[in-house]
Length: 331
Length: 263
Ligand SMILES: Nc1ncnc2c1ncn2[C@@H]1O[C@H](COP(=O)(O)OP(=O)(O)O)[C@@H](O)[C@H]1O
Ligand SMILES: [Mg+2]
Image (cartoon, rainbow over all chains, first blue to last red; front, side, top):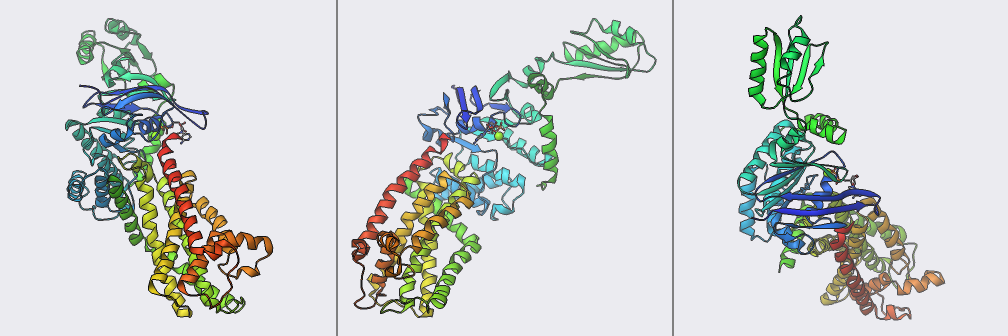
């Protein structure tokens, strides 16, 4: 089957070329899969989603979305996609039901079809009780859910979600993750942008890391982690144990340099083979009578990937956002 | 077909907003009442209209000015929708490209119908009345509404270029005040100084006002009509302006809407 999204060489500049938001980006979402586009603020995520959802015309580049040429048949593309933009664009004066019903009508459904679909989605997103209240009174999480529900009205084959969980409290985020996984299980293809490394790891089949409008890495979460040398074993020795003895005993397991922190009696080294290797490491130390307080396998996080690829972490933004999220009402 | 349904859906949304945010409606309706009362009682004694009573003269002018301001709501509404991302959201749907604008300009006619109604009632209270036939009076109201409708496409176009509520409000004040004051709306044309008088004679607002006065029977018998063709044939001249404004600005606004993706 063909890809749900396949675009090449997207270029977009703002302010008459002054700001280069995208510098030749390729994106592919295979049918029924989730592509996570991961990048810090200003990386070009929203610009890319806007182009894919026909809101913005690229300076260069081309592609096919949901089987239709993005530039030649934008209206056909629109019939087959669902979009939830970065800032939930729900109409505050309308009720949840009215928002969804209006979208249904604009997608060409009859009045009764639109009513049935709106009620179905309100139930699916846990908004039935709030459905007849104006969206003005909704919490951040409820608005976001309504906005995502709006993207699903016409049962689109391809869904775009731009930072769907930014600004949500942890509980709402988990709820939305569950819904998103369900969508994909039902066969939709999804492109999701996020600043949350954990989110991409959790939801996406494959990940494209972008920074300053360019791809800087791509692959599955596991592949990206492997780029950093895979798993590492981290050991803390019991006080009084010889670090040198331990180091020589462990040399056979390390697939790279063994880093030593004398002060805390810690050793850190890359290994192949994951937990099996960890067991062998512990057996070896026991046979040499070297005691440890703590031993574990540490998998590189996407944060590590990000740091090594971009030279800066996305964590700063993340912490700020999470603090902001704590203030939002829990739904 | 989809053009009509889409337009109706957008218009319905705007009507729901009119109902749910009554503050706006109160403002829309209070200011015309205030205008009628202020002009009738404060300037009523100071401005002399030969052969006529000022309140009879005034009402058509106030109607013309108020429906012009009504068009500002179209601009403000579109600017707000742009800012809140609602227009983008509409643009991601398979809608007819003129439906959002047609729905908005169409539903905003309701504001003007309501304000004309309220102003007419206030006018009756202060001593104004219609002295013509029902069809003529209806034609007078329709002409006012058509002019406001055409003008709301100008505001729609401006709002798509500069989606800022403040700018829209300021811009409309700067256009509407001179247009509605350098005219026969509040004072007889003869009292204006020479060059302004020529401008006023050909100003479409003067023609709309003149036409409305004629159609309401608010001109005293044997009243002098200025020589200008525009005021000798005010209904025709008004209709020409309505068509010109609509034919230019409706396509311009729709084109602009279609090109929103080319920032
Ligand atoms: N409408 C715009 N006008 C000018 N610059 C813009 C506009 N939209 C985005 N940019 C700039 O383009 C770059 C990419 O922005 P964006 O796509 O919003 O990134 P992200 O969604 O990853 O945060 C940023 O430098 C941003 O400031
Ligand atoms: Mg963004």
